[in-house]
Amino acid sequence: MTQLFFSEALLPGGWSRDVRISVADRRIAAVERGASPDSGDERHAIGLPGLANVHSHGFQRGMAGLTELRASSADNFWTWRELMYRFVGRMTPDDVEAITAQAYVDMLEAGFTRVGEFHYIHHDPSGAPYDNIGELAERVVAAARASGIGLTLLPVFYAHFSFGGEPPSDGQRRFINGVDRFADVMDASRRAINGHQDGVVGIAPHSLRAATPDELAAILPLAGGGPIHIHIAEQTKEVDDCMAWSGRRPVQWLLEHMPLDRHWCLIHATHMTDDEARALVATGAVAGLCPVTEANLGDGIFNATPFFATAGRFGIGTDSNVLIGVADELRQLEYAQRLTRRARNVLASPETLSTGRALFDGALAGGAQALGVTGGLAEGQSADIVSLDTGNLALAGRSGDALLDSFIFASRRSPVDCVWTSGRKVVTSGRHHQADAIAAAFRRRLEGLLAA
Ligand code: NGQ
Ligand code: ZN
Image 1 (cartoon, helix red, strand yellow):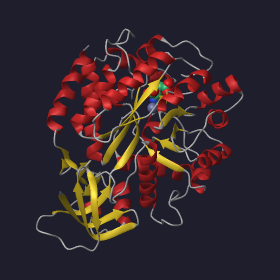
Image 2 (cartoon, helix red, strand yellow):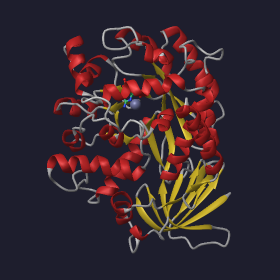
Image 3 (cartoon, helix red, strand yellow):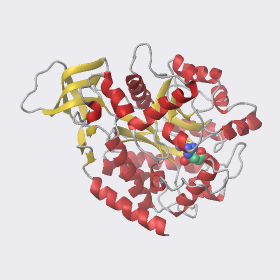
Image 4 (spheres, protein in one colour):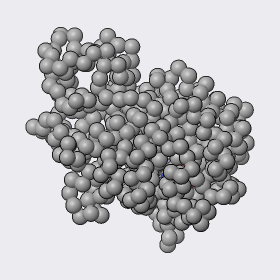
């Protein structure tokens, strides 16, 4: 039994002082408030629940910063995607594992304790399946194990280039499966995750571009009650192409044809009308927002007004992993709204005057739902805990919600101090315990890939 003592901690009911959290067998066994510290307690200043990162393509961490030069006069999401496909074309399983492990270390150091890996590289560089169809799913699980992050593995079904069942392009060859072989990928993914700390397997039809309605109907039962994630309405071209194909906008099409409910997570959902946003909220599904990547790729700005006005559920994701940060995602989410609406504290709520608190609480609840778990510092929950360093000047003199506001909006250096996942401490003083070894492997792999 480990006992952690926090001078101040954010519990499900709000901030409490002098909190002792007892951890046993990966879980929170007890939470005492107004406690006095024991000699056996490990003492920390501020305790927060770990957040879920609902959307990651771990391998893309390896190309972070390499697509920021203008290759044509009209660089956009689609030209970026071609560069990404070129990068995919060269990666070996060792590359995928080492790069993904580094991405997960970065996430843990940022205060994410679980990741939803939207995993779509399945095959070898020629597009042929590996002898073991689960080769790369096993590499993702190995990366999660090496880092200690909680994993919700979302094997991706990918079959087409665009709407209407268009054949895939050569650049997509490593992603492609028919329905039958995808069932094998799902089985292999379940075997791969077996035994990983509270591992969850869901399913991810890549997008309405990559899966036809018949294929969607065939694969959805494979979710087996787990989360269902899909990229949707990220780019205006995608909305236009969906209209041309079906006469419906992407989110509208999903609302009309799919049984959306709390198991679903719609990644991006950037381009929604007010009616779509309100109808989405009513289904109980989560919007998986990836504000840093959405800005980096020039996607557009989420239609937050009708969504938040009706208490829409959202999670945050680091998606392309161009920059990995809890504060960065939440700040970008709020700042995009401030810039378009020329207003301040847009996403604060009547109950939570603090913008930081509203963003953090929302991402905590929606993130856990989207990854098929429950969260928060409460008895019975997985012991996924983050402490903040009060030595960080951005937090000087703060308590309660002001800590979150200052963490998200005002800290240049991250104040994340220690991180526990499933009761195991994996980050101390802001550094992951395996940081050096994992970084060395990452560096070797990148040097190899970029020299090629
Ligand atoms: C992905 N990423 O699958 O990595 C996608 C790009 C696509 C984002 N959508 C490919 N941000 O959507 O076709
Ligand atoms: Zn994505």
